[in-house]
Length: 296
Image (cartoon, rainbow, N blue to C red; front, side, top):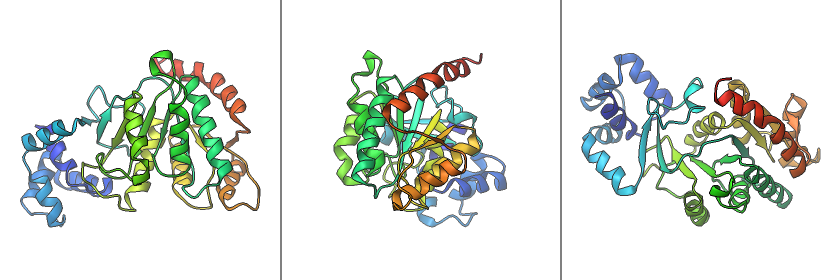
C-alpha cells in the first residue's frame, strides 16, 4: 500500500529533494522504496537499512511514542500546507494540530533583549485574539513567541495554541534548554511536528527545509529580528512565494539584528510598530482569512 511505503520512506530521513528525485526516477513511492531496499540507488546504506524496516514495526514504534504519521492525503493533514508547491509529503505529529488562523512568528536566535520582549508580547497578543502561533522552537525569538502564546490562557477559552516545527526528529529536543517549553506546547493543547522521523539529528541542512513548513502553516508571517542572512529571512521569502503576507519589526539601522527586518520593509513587507499595532492588523485580517477558509 502507498501509505505503508510512505512511512518506510519517511524513516530514511532523506532530504525532500532526494525523495522527489527517487519518486520521479522510479515512478511511484512503492517503486522508490523497492529500489532503495534492493540497493538499486545511491542512497546511503544507513538510510537503506532504515527504509527497509517493515511497516508494522515502524507503526508500533510511533504508537509507543504517541506520535501520529500524516500523509498529505490524510484528512488531518494541515489544509494550508496541503495547497503549497513543494510542501512535505508527510508529517510526524505529537499533540493536536489546532484549527483557526495562524501566525508564524520568527526571528534570530542571537537576538536582543528588546527582541525577546517584543516576540513574547506579539505571541501573547496573537494568541489572546485566537490566533495560533507557529514557530521553530529555536532559542531566541521563536521560543519567546511560544512563551508569550502560552501565557494567553486556555485554548477552551478562545486563545490560540502553539505549533512548533522542528528541523530534527520529533523526539529530539533541540536546543536542550527548551525541553520544558516542548512539554508546555503539548500540554497547552498545541502540537509539535516534523518532516523527519524520530531520532533524526538536528543537522544544519534540515533547518532551511523546515522553514517552508512554518511558512506553509501560516496565514501571516511576522519577522521580529533578523540579521542579513538566516532562517527567518528564508521563511519570509518562502512565505512571499506562497502568497502569505509578511510583516516585520523595524529597528535601528546600525543594529545587526535589524538589518534583515529593515531590508524586508524596504522591499515591501508591512511594518509592525508594537503589540497594539499587531492586534489591529490581525483583527482586520481575520474576516478575510475566515472567508478563505470556508471558500467564500
